[in-house]
Structures are given as C-alpha cells and as structure tokens.
Image 1: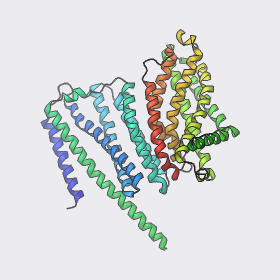
Image 2: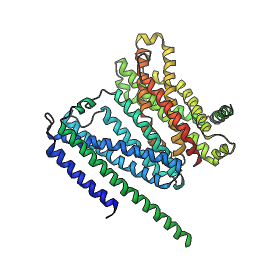
Image 3: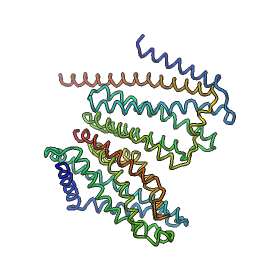
Image 4: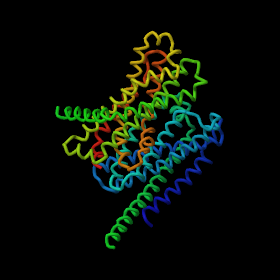
Length: 222
Length: 238
C-alpha cells in the first residue's frame, strides 16, 4: 500500500469519526436544534481555508527563492483546495444564516470577507490560465503572496465596516464540552482530507508536467 | 541619491508620454464623466433627500468612477511599456526594478489625482450634493473639497501600489487586458471601502475626527508599497 492510500484511508476514518461525534456524541443545541450541526463543518472548513491559502503563500515565497517547479505545483494545488473549502464555507454559511438570522444572505462581516477572499483566488486562477507558460509560475507566485497579505486587511476592514452578527470568540469558548470535542474532531478530519487531496493534486500536477516533457521530446524527434 | 535621480527621470518620462499625446487623459476624463452621468440618470428622479444618503451616493459614484479610470490608465501605461519591448529598453539602462515600480506608482498617482481634481467638483454638482451639504460643511466648502481630494489621493496611492504590480502581470497576457479589473478589484476592496467611508464622513461633517478608516487607507498603502517594492523584480523579469 502506498503512502497516499494510507492517508486516504486515514481521511475516510477521520471523516466517519467526525460524523459520529457531530451527530450522536455532541449535544443538540437548545435554540437552533439540529441545524446547529452545520457549524462543525462550516467553521472547520473556514479554518482549513486559511491553512490552504497560507500554504499557497508559503510555497509561492519558496518558489520565488528556490525556483523549483514542485513548489509551484504545491502552491497551485493548495490554492485550488482553498477555493473548494471556501466554496463549502460560502454554501453552508447561508444555510446557517437562514435559520439563525432568517435570511439567506446579508452583508454580514465574515460572509462578505469570505466572498472577497473567494473572488481573489478565483482571479488567481483566471490570471494563471491566461498567462504564457514561461511566466506563469513566477507571476502566480507573486499574486499568491499579495493575495494572502490582503487577507487580514480585508477581514479587519469588513469587520469594522459592519457590526458583527457572528458569534464572538467568547461564545465559542462557552460551547458545551461535547460540542468542542466534536468540533475539534471535524476540524482534524477536514485537515487530513485537505492533506490527502493536496498530495493527490500535487501528483496530478507532476504527471501533467512529465507528460508535457514527453510530448515536447516527441515533437523534437519528428 | 542615484536611485532618487532614476525615479525622477522615470516619472518625467511617464508624464511626458502621457501629456504629449493626451489621449489617455481625455479618455479617462470622458469615461469618468460618463460614469457619473450614468449614475445621475439612474438615480436622478430619486436622489435621496437625506444629506447623509446623498453623501453616500456621491462617495460610491466617485470611487466607482476613479477605480475604473485607474484601471484604464494602468492598462494603457503598461501597454506602452510592453509595446516594442520598451520595458526591456528601460531595463538595459540599468534601472533598478524597484525604482521602476516606485516611479510608475508615483506617475500614475499624479495623473489620477489630476483627474480627481477636475472630476470631483463636476460629479458633486451633477449628483446635486453641493446644495444639500450641511451648513458646517458649506462654510468651509473649499477646505472640505481639498480634504476630499486628499483622501481620494491617499486611496489612489493604495490603488496604485497594488495596481502597478498586478497590471505588470496582467498586461503580459496578450489581448486580455480586461483581466486586470477581475484581479485588481477584489484586491483593492479595503481601499474602496475605507475611501468611501472617509469621503462620506468628509461630506457630512467636514472632517475626519475619530475616523479610523483613514488609518486603514494608510496602512494598506504602506503594506502593499513595501511588499510590491520587493516583489516587482520578479514581475519585470518575465
């Protein structure tokens, strides 16, 4: 069994464990009842988004310094996953909002800033697909760094732009112990899933670049 | 000292290019006026009565107009650099990439501030804001206008700090200049938000007392000036 398969199995196990902890171990919330369960995946995905884009930024810096193609591949793979998890946050957010605040969407601070974050990284990919082969890696690395620098500023400014409807950090600390445990485990599960997908995506990128090299060599011959 | 001289010469080159032909200046002037006009028509019959709402409308129109005018300016200015490999020519003279970046930021800033100086009073009149300003602002109208231009200029600095590096990247994609707006607008979101808030505060109270948005504008500009200053080398090499 390869290492990737091992991580895959681990991710599956963690996800099932998270499902168990979320749905039967954690106490049902008093006012929102079962709908509150979405919190475990919503917040955990949001945390994973920051990790994913952070990894993109880190490997973009490494790429600019060391110029090794594999750093670029990791950065791209991670940015893609960041978008996936960000989409999950944006989809689960409105479901929560519908029940907690009785609206599907409002310009609430963190919803707004997550949307901007999502748009920033979508733009990263639009730009990347339009760039020429030889400049693509350097340019997307530069953009990966700039976009991540912008994240705290966007969050901070949107936060003070709107009064915050989101539960403050204090209330999160006041969660029932079973809820905290379930939340921690679902975060762990999503992080392992992220690592698994990252490795898979990185391998695909590597295969793609190998294929391109072979195609190029064939063209040289003929 | 040498770096400073380089920057001055590069700014002179940029501004000379812009003012000899004047086509960009005319283009963005007409464009901004058109944006204001479209908003005036769209809201014309229902201009909000409340002075604060009117100020909000004016601020959003101004920042919309100047963001898009800025995008046009940046696209044009980097098109000139990319055409016939002009940028390579500049690099061959031994100019430091970071100095090139700073000069580009400053020349674009000067250019856009001039535009703001001309368009802002016209826009305020078109949107009928000048008539409903509170008495405290009316008394110091000129001072408030100058402050407003100042705020717009600080916001434009933040806009240019990111805009120059992003347009350096996006203009390398041939024939896809529209990419700049897609990439740049989400990135400059804090600038537009903070700038609009500051403008509203100026138009309603005539001052920025106790307003932290101005510090967001300044912090944003500094953070991005510093990071783009370091990163521009990689953009220009491609």
